[in-house]
Every structure is written in C-alpha cells, then in structure tokens.
Image 1 (cartoon, rainbow, N blue to C red):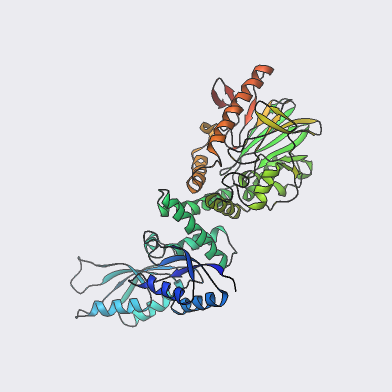
Image 2: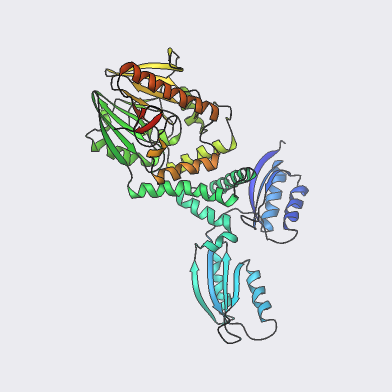
Length: 487
C-alpha cells in the first residue's frame, strides 16, 4: 500500500512533553512527519502537522490522537467569561478552585484580587473556553460551589488572542466564506498557517500575516455592504467613457463609442454594483458588445462571465483563471504565496468560474516594444491589442483605441497619487501576503518604461494627448515625465 499524505491540526495542552506524546503516536504507527509548525507567539495550544503513512496506519494514528483529545476535528465558537468569585478564606481554597478550572480544560486569562476590598473579598477571574458550548457547564459547576457574579460572557474578545487564537481566527473566517464545512475550514486554516510560517522566515510578524488574511476579506465584505462604486464620466472622441473605481481592487470601464464595451469587471462580489452602474448610464446587459479583460487577477475579471457578453482575454490570462494561480506561466508558477493568495481572494470575492472566452493571441506584429496580438473590430470600433512582457502577470494585455485616443494599461501603468488612502491600504494587503504584486519585478519596470515611451511617441505623432486608463486609480495623462490626473 502506498503512503498517503495527510494534514491535520492538533490541539494539545501547553505542558512539557505534550508534543513528544503526539510524535510518539505517529512514530508507533509508522507516520513520516514531513512538516510541523508550532509557535507559542500565535497560539500555545495548536500544532500543524503534515505527514504521510499507509492507510490503515494513518487512520490508527488519527484515532489514537483523537482518543487523547489531541486531534482537532472541528473549530467551535470560543467563549470568554469574566466573573467575580468569592473563595472561602481557608488554606487550599485557591488550589481547589484552580483544580476545578483545570478539570474542565479551561484556559485562565487572568486572576486578580481587588486590593480595595477587605481581605477575603471576591477574586476577579477571566477564562477562555475554546468550545463555547462548555461555558454554561463551567458556570453551573462554579455556582454550585461558590458565590459568583458574572461580569462578561461573550464569544468574541481581544483577550482570546493569547489563548485560542486559531479558534477565533476560524470564527472570523466563517463570516467571510459562509456555508463551508469544518473539513474545508480546517484545511484553509492549515494553509493560512503555512503562509504565516513562510512569511515569518522572510521577516514578517506571524500574527500580522494572519490578520492581513482576514483584513483582505473583511475590508472587501464591508465595502460591498456599504454600496461602493465611484463613477466618473469623460467625453471622448466618438462618445463617452465611464470610469468605475471600486473601494477595493481594480477599476472597470464602460466605453460607449459606437460599440458598447466593458473593460475589466472588478471583483465578483461587486457584480451587482457593476450591473447597477451599467443600468445607470442607460444600458442593459444585452447592449454590451464585448468584455475586454486586461489580465487574470480576480479583481479585474471576477465578474466577467456575469454580464452575458463575449469575454476577450489572452490565453495566459484564461489559464491563470482556470488554474487559480496568478503566477501561472511565469518563473514563479505554483509558488506557495501566489497560489494561496489567488485561491483566498477568489473565495473572499465570490469570483466567477471561468466560462468560454475569445482568446486573443497570434503575434501579428509589434508596436513600440510590444507584440501586437490582434486588431479587433467591434461594431466598427478599432482596437489594437498589445501583449505585456510578463512583469505584473503573464498574458497582461493593453488595449489601444486609436480613434478615441484611449489606452487601457492594466496594472502596468498606474498614477498612484490618484488612489484614495483606503484603496492604497487594500493594495498593501496583497503586497504583504505575496511580498510583491508583480511576478517579475524587472520585467514590470521594463513594461512601465516602454508604456511611457509608447504614450510619448503616440502623442508626438498624433499631436493629441492619450487618455491613460489604469487598472487602479484615476484616469491620467502623461505630461513630460509626469503622470497627472486627466484634465
């Protein structure tokens, strides 16, 4: 029988020898520990294992760990209790109370006698129970023995962080990905911990990493609830262009110049807001002639298949979406950080599954250092499609509309001064979790420099400013060496 890989989360007492006991069980059942992670700075009671073992041995090891109370099969909602309890003023009273607490598997957050009351007064106690269902049982036991006054009884409290961090982390995850089962949640927790471990090696503080994972989803979720899009309208040769800046992630553009074209669509969780914007300008979904996608990040194509029109993108971008790996096709393909981030943000943002697409490829020529992939004609509207060099992401496309003097530059040319503080903050979260938003920083700089040159050459040749529509931030123009807001 071949060895089976398996990941599991262990809940172990924070006492000498506990980890050794777990390792002894795995050794006894011929388990090969391939990765283990334990960090008291995050949670003193949680250990992450990856091991391989034959099927029967693996099950026997898990059963034995479960019988010891070491195997975490669920992530229950924790409870925080604060109460005043009056102990008898006799030798051993505190010992007996602590023995009762320990016997219920409860973590003590703090104990404190109030020095302002007479000797023998109440003891202020705060405890953490990683399974809130046991909280009432503990209170019943204590009330039957001691005078007790409850000060606080809640499921969420900052003091949980130092006792059952991962249980609380999972509780917040539930609000971001509702409806998932415990097995999925434990798996996601395992992967989140792996990311924290990897970034800790690179100098990040582990709790900051885990907090950033949650913030990536919480900020997005909150923005959706608040109703979100900021839309600015510009007159352009041949019609109008509407720039939609969402609070998190990339822009979407609605171009009405004879053809009605959507360029990028934002996160999937913004699809209702995008559709509302489309209808606000007098369109219906059936009016859309084409959806053009600059690249495969989900904040640019997360609702591309919800609009009902043909979706145009590069073959590489389609592979990125299909494989849930924003580094797919690059030198960092399959990288731990990029793969986790892609799957995490797809989950948090309710991204569309990849449907059918018109794949733009062919290298039919070149333009100022970029390969031209296609010359589109969308109801009489000409579009030159250029392929990037794989700096920000493989398969990123730039769309030039020569008759309207507009270029859509994806994430390769952004005027960061036009970003709001909130949008800058959200962009920073991705950088923390991946260390860079570019799959190749050298090529990314090359792309930016070439795009600036392209804009200069176009403007010198046509005598007309080129409207730069970036993947994030405001519509801009190039004056000299400076990107400035479009005037």
